[in-house]
Length: 397
Image 1 (spheres, rainbow, N blue to C red):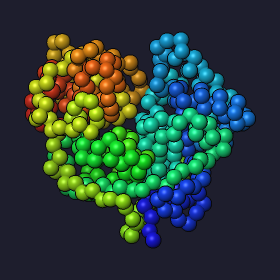
Image 2 (image 1 turned 120 degrees about the vertical axis):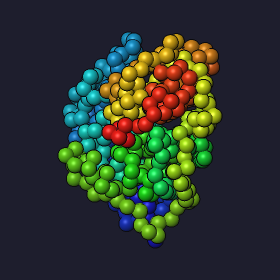
Image 3 (image 1 turned 90 degrees about the vertical axis):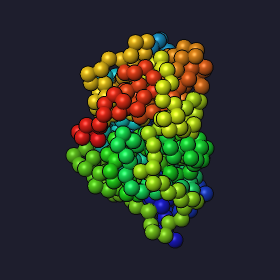
Image 4 (image 1 turned 45 degrees about the vertical axis):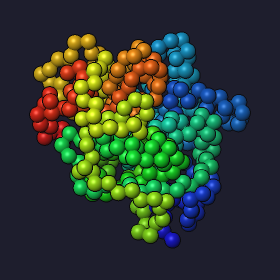
């Protein structure tokens, strides 16, 4: 019986010929990641509770000064110092200091550190992002990270796989963010709970790697263990000259078994948003157009890569932000603390809009793609980008 991409990677890591959903396996990890929020507790557990003084492979670990950098207070500065000291003491090759790296989920792909066919873990829930590069990538806690740092292996339950097949091609202005918001709107925030989301289909061939990373980034918003895409020419071109190690892509067997298969005609997917207070509260843009805004945020590990900023810039060029609206843009190399007051309305390109996620628990946060966010900042209300810029420039498609 055939295996899915996820099953093949876990089988290889466990040294087994095959695995099936529900199997418990002890698998070797190919690459691990931690940041300033998770490395300090992981390092303490590794040393004080496990008695380990060295990590299993300093070349196979990346550490980023990420979540609280630049430090906002003394506690954040202490986390940064502990992260820095641990990384230097362990001889971690891929340590990214403040101002040298940025958001971990952008930094690792950009540096060619997470590769096809590999088993990747990161002490951050959005580590599932890396699966766009045809690997099994999942988030773990600091205790599990301590085990990986010391031993280079971890227990996994082989997840059931849900297959998402995308036909045709996205319409003008509709982006990967709209597609994944639509999908999560269809299955719910627990629709893929602890399962693998395998994304395939002709539509993905027209989506660049940075957009693909947006799709897998939000696997966790559907409750998934991981998200994964097939290896193709887009993947190869992205990794050429970038990959730090040889790699072996995986593909699902024709007779692989799936718990369920979902099929979407992406040409029918509308430009959309996730309304408050959940990522699965999807609505077409037309339903919320005209909603007054106090703040627009373009950034986060979901939509702050260069292609995202170029799309937003194309809409913003020649315009001014509307009176009374705060527009905050953060590229992937920076983290900015965002706070919104009670009753304020924010449009954001982030991945979550749960109560309190961006400031006051009663703030109303909508999620959208960067072009919608940029257009809305210009008008002060939720707006279709075509109202500001009639056609998407060819060089940012």
